[in-house]
Every structure is written in C-alpha cells, then in structure tokens.
Image (cartoon, rainbow over all chains, first blue to last red):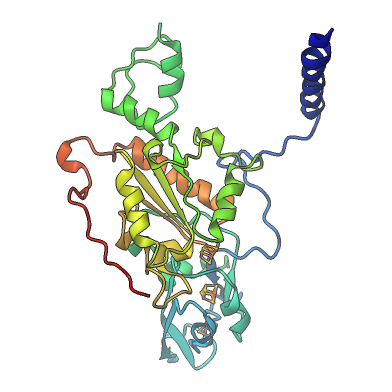
Length: 148
Length: 193
Ligand code: SF4
Ligand code: SF4
Ligand code: SF4
C-alpha cells in the first residue's frame, strides 16, 4: 500500500499536470519560418526617409550625431545647387554613415532629427561575420525612390 | 537503406546530392567532413557566459517562447571543456578579458564565438577606460550580433548565420588551420591595492 501512496499516486498526479499542459496554447515562435509581430515602437535598423516627391528629408544638420550617446553617426553636409538637388533645404548629407555595431538602438537620433529623416524600423536581422560590414552607408540606409 | 541519414542530409543545400531527390531511393555521395560539419552545426553546446544585461536575452532565447533547442543547442554548459560555442553576452571589462581568454583556451576545438550585443562587439556606449572595445581584441569572433540587447530573434538569426558558416565548412580541417593556442602559461601581473 505504501508503494501506491508514495510512488504510483505521485506519478499519476505528475502526468496529470503534463496532460493539462497539453491543452495549453503553444507559445513557441518557429523563428526562421515565422516571425513574431513586432511592437509598434520597436527600434531596429535605421532608414533615411524621403518626401513623396523623392527628395531626401535629411538636411545634413548633424543634430542626430550630436544626440547619439554612442557617437556612431557621421554626417558630412554639402550645399545643394539647382542643378543637383537632393533635399528641399540649402544643404544635404553627402555622406551619412552609421556604425551599426556600436549603435544601441536608443532612438535619440530619431528624436533629435528636425525633419524626421532618420527613423528606426523593425528589421532586426543584422548579424554578420565581419566588423567592417556594419558601417551602413547612406546608400544602404536610404529608402528606395517612391513609385511615381 | 539509410533513410534517416537522407532526411538529415537532404535538408541542407550545401551538401552535394546525386540522383533524383523527388523519387526517393537516391544515392548520396558526400565527404566525411560535410557530414561532420552538419553534425557540428546542429549540436552546438553553448557556454554560459553572460557578462551583463545581454545575458537576460540569452536566457530568454533558451526559454520556451524562442526555444533554442529547436537548433539542438539547449544544453548550456558551465564547463568550457564540454562547450564548443561561446556566446559573449555583455560588456567585457578589462579585468574580465584574461578570464575570457583563459576559458576560450580551455574549450576544445572546433570552437566558435558569437559576440552578442553592442558592448561585446565594439564597446557600445562604454567608450571608456574600463571596457574592452570589442571582444575580438581578445578572442577571434565568428559572428557579431548588433543590438542593445539583441532580441532573442536577433540572436537566433546570428546563430543561424553561424550554423551556415559551419555547414559551409569553416571549421578547421587541418592542424595548420587551428587557431593559435597559447602553449606557454601567461605571466599574470600581480595587482597591488
Ligand atoms: S539609435 Fe541611438 S545609438 Fe543608434 S545611431 Fe541613433 S542615437 Fe546613436
Ligand atoms: S538625419 Fe536628421 S538630424 Fe541627422 S543630419 Fe539628417 S536632418 Fe539632421
Ligand atoms: S549591449 Fe546593451 S544590453 Fe548588451 S551588455 Fe551592452 S548595455 Fe547591456
């Protein structure tokens, strides 16, 4: 009788928990095939946005570089001319580089930007093999031209 | 005959396969190294090496929501002798660097290193006297995962990148490919307080 009390009953009780768990919702996200929905304010890879007309929003003011706590943004500004116009203002960023490996995705650059040019979107697949590949240049960050 | 081997090996496009896969009953010609790399990539034993806040996300990767055991690496090992993957999760201080190097040296070959987070990969915001500016100054790093902290999905993406690398045969094959291992004991300076 002691065997029933000490061994059989606890085992049945234990499997009872397993049986109840089987009815629970499955929580695992099968990551590479299925991606979880990101929260609306998720901050991941940066994007340099454009106006609907195709002009760049960035005016090369370097306020984002000043606000960045990791000092990982480099902006080099240049003057717009009428022949070569990149942004509506006087100046545009001729070089815009972010060191993704040093960036902490705090979003201060997005907050500091006066024109809303730099935004953090939710592409998190950034891992890579070499440290040099993490310097994201302006060409990599810029949005594609909007469809006419 | 080897039904099992087929299902394992056919998964990967880097494996050379001869014959008609659709019709089953095909012959697989492969090298021993390729099979070995498949096995290596799908049974990595990570070392518990959480150094700071990133370790929380590493632990959550092992939880049931993200479930690292789907990739055959749920067995986090506390001993470097039983591990072949070191996930450096967190900022690496200069005091910790010799310890990290020693533990890396104690891991058996082949060994792989993932540098998780901005701090481990480059120093991140801590550009100061106390933090090593990138764990690659101390150990060779295979995959860098940016983020502060990288979400479990981002870490899983890094792990998949590492598996790709191993499957393509980047593990050392010859003795000369082995990473330099220190054979003479280091003289560790005594610190006076
Ligand atoms: S998200 Fe933060 S750390 Fe990254 S570039 Fe912007 S300000 Fe710098
Ligand atoms: S992204 Fe915004 S803050 Fe940064 S240089 Fe361009 S306009 Fe200025
Ligand atoms: S990258 Fe961010 S979360 Fe990871 S250790 Fe550094 S400060 Fe902590």
